[in-house]
Length: 151
Image (cartoon, helix red, strand yellow):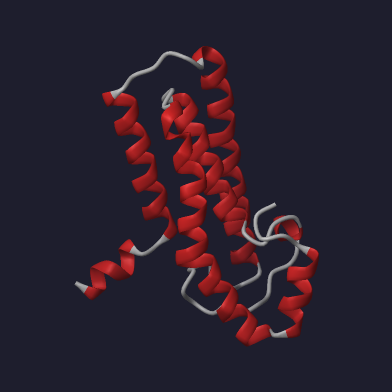
């Protein structure tokens, strides 16, 4: 059971869960509000989210450090997208969720976006920041002063 939880407790699983809730809401209570504009904006957000996530993940690979949330990074990455956001992958996940909600016309599910951000912050970001701060100390504190958690 612990082994299963090890894989379940990953941010993409939470994104899939929140997306499934939005999809279910769209199926149970269909709306036709956003039309083509919602599809275009939503598709743009999903595409941008996937691109940012891939770019940030590639940056971790090129810097030769782990992108697994519970692992201590071998290097404090502060370049590339990480100059703008301390958590570009989580920001990308949020954009993907928002985009899917617009594509599915699941407007009541917009409430899931800030809830998703709170869950990610509580379950992952705070732990990651504590781990990084313990390892990199003042360098991480200086980075936090320069770069916001989300945007």
